[in-house]
Length: 249
Image (cartoon, rainbow, N blue to C red; front, top):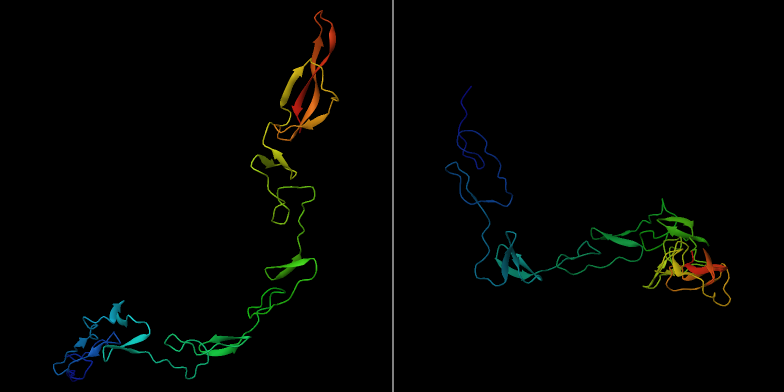
């Protein structure tokens, strides 16, 4: 077999072996290959001392965004947009070629009919500016499904949860919400004595279990109670049972 002959064609190196293809598509072959070597040059740099041009990420661009950089003339030139074959979207220079009408959307420069997305939902938006349906009375739309409408449960309550993710109200700074949804004072706990047992004459109208408003109790009221101790006169004779008050529960 005859030995391979050296090639002098561009793209090959001396020795008969094919060279690797030029990797950078933008690279330019700027000299003849008479000596069998490939000389690759890069595009010219951005012009120096030009206040209109700047380099961004290795590329020459115009400071004025309404202009476009021409790598051949190395000048910033007016951008000429085109809408040929385009009916919507950008013209390539920041202006618009038009907008699509109702029921259509712009895709690749063309107005195409919008397809409602209602195959797996029964209510709510259809993705094209319309609706997939409206729920009937007593029902509401949640994630595309009609579900039973939640009715807030606030009867007899002034605070706490309403059972539907909301609230029945809030208490003031000196009160807190009880377990049954009533604002109570942040005071003494249930059963705490507020009037010690006494043999003094009981208040008028007082009787076992009688209540009165008391802001110092967390419940907001006090209860008249009978103590276990007896009262005696100076001679040692019992005169009755002592009384007191505790915070109601």
